[in-house]
Amino acid sequence: MAAENDADMVVRDFCDAFVAHDAELLRPFLADDVVYHNIPMDPVVGVDAAVAFLAGFLAMCDKLEFDIRHLAVSGDAVLTERVDTFTMGPVVAALPVMGTFEVRQGKICAWRDYFDMAQVTKMFSGEA
Image (cartoon, rainbow, N blue to C red; front, side, top):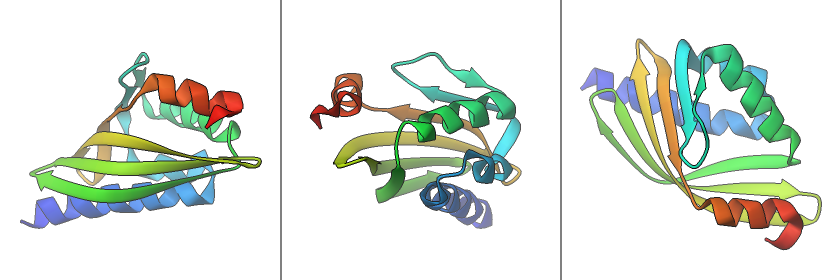
């Protein structure tokens, strides 16, 4: 049971860290060989590539907050149902997301998010 609680806390702390809006603060949560995959896009492999991708993503918005609505843990796998809220100037847009995290030795080694890419495109065009 300790492993499940550890994986749970790693993911919760990681999601909470997004409010600082600094991709480098996310680095310590990620394994060196992390695979980060926003399912509509190509996967990003390795901690440096993941942090660079997240930095670019954060640069597109003024603020990003993850609100975990439901979380389920099985061993080192953590499933999240979230609402990610993006603030871009006067636009505040909420995006429903299902996320799967795999945790190994206290670090996220795989992260997959599933969401509606059409909603993201609309949101970043200012139509949210």
